[in-house]
Structure formats: C-alpha cells, structure tokens
Length: 266
Image (cartoon, rainbow, N blue to C red):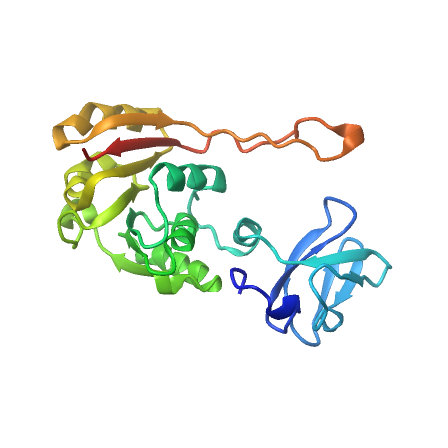
C-alpha cells in the first residue's frame, strides 16, 4: 500500500514501486509480482529482480538501462492507476481546498459528487486516523469506480459512501455536525440550505465549478441561505523543465480546471 512505509524500505511482492530511468520519459509504476516481466521503452524488467531490494537501489533492463526503484507518490499513483470516467479534481485544487477549509485529522467532511474518487482520496488522507469522509453521489456506476480507486490506497476505511440525491433528499446528517462541505455538482445552489444546516459555525462550504456562469449563480444566491465571506479562486500551476541546459517553462501546463468558491457559515 502506497501510504504505508515499506518495512525497512524493502520491496515485497504485491508492493507498488516507481521505476525511474535517466530519461524523464522513462517512469512507470508497477505492482511487483513474481514471475512477471514488464516492458519499457528501454527493454524489459524482470520483477523477480526487484523483490527484496531496498528502495533507492537499481535494477537493469534487458537492454542495460539502469532504473532506480522508489516509492510512487499518492498523486503519481492516482494519475496512472485510477480509473477516470469523470472529470477529476487535481492536486493543485485539492491542496488549496484542504488548507483553506482547514481540513485535518479528526475532521468530518461531506462531499457531494464522488466522481472518480480523486478528491475523496485527498480528503481521506488528511482526516485520518480518526476523521471521516461522507461521500454522496446520485449515480451508482460512478461511485463504484470511486470506491475501487480509494480502496487501492487502503483509505476506504475512512470513507462512508452513500447513494443519495442530495438535491431532493438533503444530507442524512444532524445539524452542525460536519467540519466542511465540498460540492462538485452541476447545480450546487440547490443544496446551499442543507450545506448550511450541517456545517459547524465558522466552517466552509467549498464549491468546485467548471463554468463562470455557475459561479455567478452561486454569488446571487448565497446570502439568502446565511453564508458570508465569499471567495472565488482559480489555481494555475506552471511547471518548468528541470534540465539545467534547457531551463524553461514546460510546453504544456494544467491551467484552468475549475473555479473554487468558498463560503463561510458565520
């Protein structure tokens, strides 16, 4: 499991490892299985040769390319291994949400729109070991994907998944019982009253919205439901090519993904 420390940093059968070559293009995450061979652009790797090695050690491909064995990050694992039938919330947005909404160990967080489980994973990672994420979705087929994804990282024990139309039925939770509400849905303004009801005072409702027209609709409605202190944010991240002779911005970047709207319950 990615989030657990490797015992004595030794690779065991069943572990996921990241293999990194000299070229920035040679990076792959593999699950270590006896008798299995994986192909790379620089030759094949026998996974038997990895079992028992320490993290940070090397293994060679059939063409002699040297690869470093290390642990993949949560983000690397999710981007490569998670199924993504829906739009996802990327790290750049998730990190801002978690810090701004003060989500940490012991928090109870509600999300409506399980999607592919990306935000669910980030939330579960931060509320552990004694917090909980309650994830609602109206579509069972999407939530089942989210459940499988989150389980791959062993974080499912911190998540309660529910099939429920929160627009029609609301949240089946007591008043003032949660530390944050995150809505990733088409018409979040129809859930503002319910979000206000279940939030503790001084805590945040966060909306992830792809369209500025949705943002405008929320800004016209939020005061009617008791919220205050609106903040609208767009997070842009531009990476640079990490090569000293070619140090420049990357050609491609993850630019606009969605607008983040924060509303506080006074």
